[in-house]
Length: 115
Length: 115
Image 1: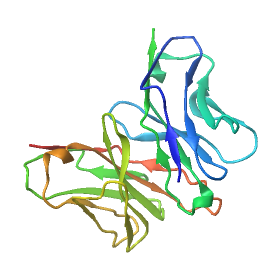
Image 2: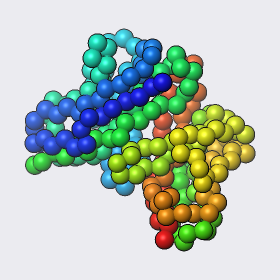
Image 3: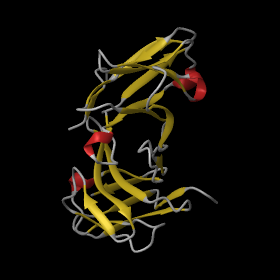
């Protein structure tokens, strides 16, 4: 079985400060991990993914995420937050050894960047 | 225009009525999905499809019906709408990748209100 948890419903950060949105996962094998972002009244958009290789993955809009196998985490980070980064962020996981092509999404974390 | 389109974007209906939400994608992606998004629940998978004429139930299929006679279309029907089906519905598609690292592309959503 595959599962993912986003322990924070909301993250508040001041513009210009670094941000972190947390994600932990559970799979039986090696995970495929994804981050998506949802702006108000829009569908989800893909940000970045980890499949294999370098643990630090860079994605769109200056975001990056670090895969940590020992902590089963895939936290989303950005060195300097912008007000326009305010959105809902979803982490997703897929266990390729499970035979399913369907990812499991977390409940989402609302990121609020204050001017 | 290329992409994934959902219609209608907004719909208000009454309890007991049949409602169909349309989803059309122009990429000939193999996989298509229907999710509902509700506060406190994140994204929940309703139905999914691996190809034309192949559909499967997701996490919350009760009260919904899908069909996929053509690769590009994946309509979702609420046969007798209930108030608990008030939600925002997202259609998504993804191509088949041998690596399994497929990314979902989402439509803009259909906001359904059942009175």
